Length: 266
Ligand SMILES: Nc1ncnc2c1ncn2[C@@H]1O[C@H](COP(=O)(O)OP(=O)(O)OP(=O)(O)O)[C@@H](O)[C@H]1O
Image (cartoon, rainbow, N blue to C red; front, side, top):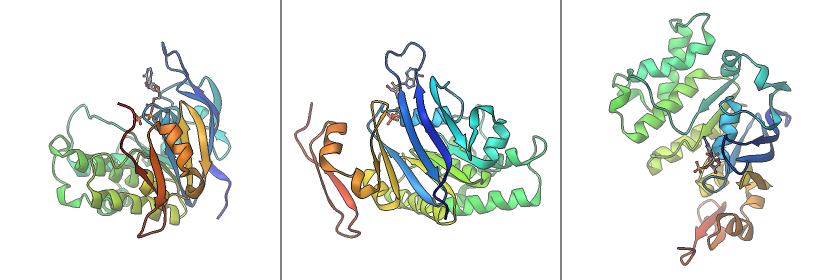
């Protein structure tokens, strides 16, 4: 498996209109095939801004984002969507769809027109619903789903979209422990199949178990980057999160595990 990043952020800086500080300040990270790359960090550290920058929803002040060497800024959005599927942190539909209709939207970038009618598209959508475990409510309207069900349906849409890279921005928000584990296992399975997975998450302990590479953001900059064993460093995490904590070993898996202590600020 090649280590050359499929998707790469090079010195990316982002400043929102009217914001005093940059949301991202010279962030570089690679997302190679065959591994889960996780971005972690406190609220407001810039994680979602990386995803917004990838999607072109916020302009880059400096730097570039490249897919196999080609700047995504000059790519046709449909061509990008055929290769990179993204689940953003939030999404509201203007009007409800049936779950199976919404998941089928993931196939739109692959069609020649704004239609998804091919047997291969239907098969990809059905398979994605099965993997994401949303088949039981395939005929329900999206506006009647619980928060966790909607989250899983959005993951199913991204799986239906396929492509070489999957970007998930806090995909386990709203998920119970079983569905959270299932989601991490889906990410792990995709990476084992050779896909490039970029996962934004607050679940440091699960990230430490499932990701091969972690990037810790702090105030728009990379505070630490490397294997989970290196990034899960107590003093570094305590400084970045500004909360007393210890890093121990998970007794079941021996992965590094963060235990927050009582008595922090507030
Ligand atoms: N549209 C915007 N206009 C101005 N500032 C913004 C905007 N969106 C985000 N920011 C600011 O940019 C910084 C980074 O935000 P971002 O959403 O990338 O953080 P995050 O790490 O994803 O946070 P969280 O963990 O809370 O989701 C924050 O200070 C945030 O307040």
